Image: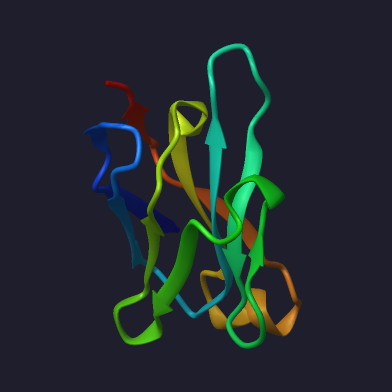
Length: 125
């Protein structure tokens, strides 16, 4: 099993910045894509940004130019640098990783989506 632990959320004023981190641990054979999702009260969970193990990143239109996703494969960690934050960015942010826990899972291409517990981001004056 893979565990994901997020950190870095909090309260910030509009226009401010925050950096979220998510570290993966446990039984990890290979991590494919990693990403960040968010869920605001009364709304569905939505993709914020994703980064594959290799290749280009992907962002929701609402955060393009303001958020930057990156990863450190050596540390099994993904980051989300958020700038020019708006009140509508307020949500619980969840880390996601698609991974193979064991070699046998990789051999059979049985990857699993793992989720963190979520971290609250509140943008308010």
